[in-house]
Length: 89
Image (cartoon, rainbow, N blue to C red; front, side, top):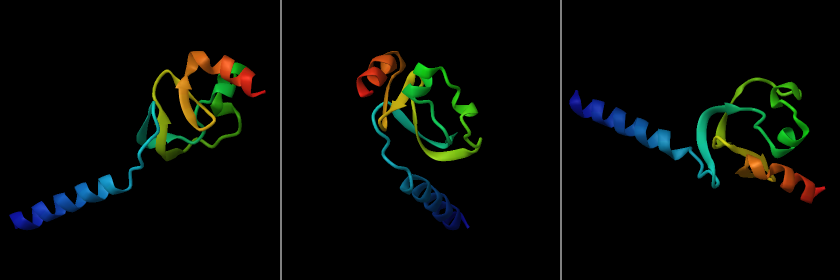
């Protein structure tokens, strides 16, 4: 019985770590993140990501850390967003 319990626990641990991607710098894996992450464009244009037609569901994946926003698939400091968006125009 104890052996079965150990096998079940080990199987769970292996399965729970296998599917997690390596997240880019300044981001973390989350099992329930926003479908529409905060972007630099949102910050510069003062748009709430929740109001731009996104469905409110959980998405498993990488999410920018607090104080960071998504810009060109990278998480950058929010205070640099206005400069980055201007350069890309």
